[in-house]
Image (cartoon, rainbow, N blue to C red):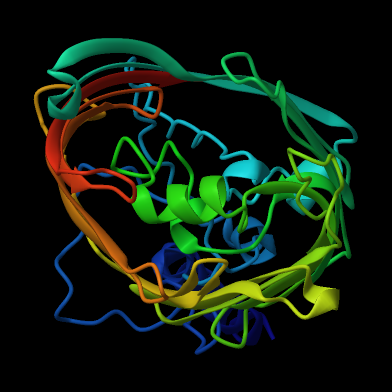
Length: 410
């Protein structure tokens, strides 16, 4: 009995000794890795620097709670904010609006119309000095135009009033224009230019020559075809059809200076298209006493070509005057050459020619050749120096005329 108990005690002591010696080894042995706990380490990756701080093994639960961010969802990296440039970019200067009476489109843009009533003052002054060979080069100083006016606009209504302080007839333009929402249909009422003769409809500021020419003067001043008149006119504009524009109206007849009796109403019609960006084609007509046979009338066709700074205008006119049939041809070319010395400064050489033939019982002819150059500054000032050699209707001989004109507008 005593030997058996002694043997059991010996075995228990050996087993306890083995367990005590094996516990440090089990504690030092790492736990077996699972596939989901940590990814495999690529042998090609560089070894981790021992100087880097160790990651606490007790943090995997916190890392697991952090959402994984993909490159697409990653917030953009902050970029360096550039210091604002002290020199602000220059804003383009608004283009000076041309009055309706001078062929402009006015202020009827929808963006402007939504602001309510808009009133814009405008004006211009032309000062001219000339010397004519037919008058022994006697110098003549004149103010051919000193115009002031107001243009007012609402979303669908525009009005314009202009007076010329240098003219015998003070009132030049006074009319109202009503348009639909898309500006396709317009109705004019009041005193304004009749839609006849492209040279007459051109803005006197945009026209590169000092005078409109002998053909326009002869037809309007001598035979009262076209010009400013009281009347009513309708206009249709279709931009999608080569920018087609058709204008037609009825105007007050001419008043006889001797008897004081006014003739019956006149009629005028004009159509223009723009088949190409650089080319505009037009045709116009004017009939005096249109409802009584229209024995005095004129028909015209015109074309304008614009290529960069080059502008070429041509027009052909024929018809019947009290003196008999007539025909006329007009041509004008100019080239605007900007100068880099000063912003807005440009030189514009110009050359033109006109011819007119009276083909009735009283046969006569007239012609004019003009040349010179203009100095343009911004849209507010220009100086024109031109020479003209002409034989006007009624002149006995031809002669030269030299003119210098200074003009400004606002």
